[in-house]
Image 1: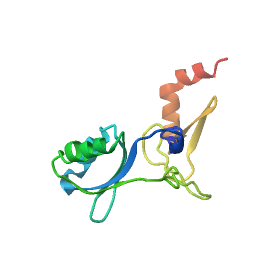
Image 2 (image 1 turned 45 degrees about the vertical axis):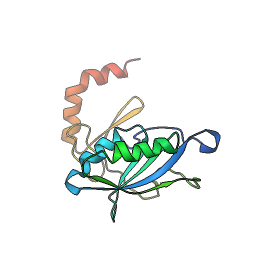
Image 3 (image 1 turned 90 degrees about the vertical axis):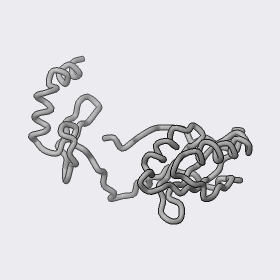
Length: 160
C-alpha cells in the first residue's frame, strides 16, 4: 500500500559512541527553500530536515564526530549555501524520547493511490489479491484494465 517508507532500527545512543548530535535552525530564502533543502539532504551528517514556521524555516538534526566537525559543517558546508543563514545550533546532551513521526490511531484513514491510474482512491477500493499481496484500484475499470495489461504475469505468479 506504500504506507511503510523504510524499516530501520532505532539504535540506543547510550550504547554507541555517536559523537555529537545537534539541532540546528536555519533561515532559507523562501524562493530557494526547496533547492536548499535538497542540497542539505545530500550531506551525510544531516539526519533529519524539517520545514518549519517562525523565525527559522528549516530545522535539521545533525550527527558529527566532534565539535570541530560541527563547526566545519555550520561554517563551511551550510553557511556556504547561497540564501541560507544559521539561526541557532544546539548540542543535544540527552535524548529523552525518540519515536517515529507518524502515530497510527483507531479510525485514521489511509491515502491510497490506484495501482493502475495513480489517482487517489476515495471510498472503498477495488482490491485484487495475488498470492499474499494486494493491489488497490479506484474503480472497476482500472481493475479490469490492470488485469488485461498484466494478466499473463498474474497467472504466472499463481502457478505452483
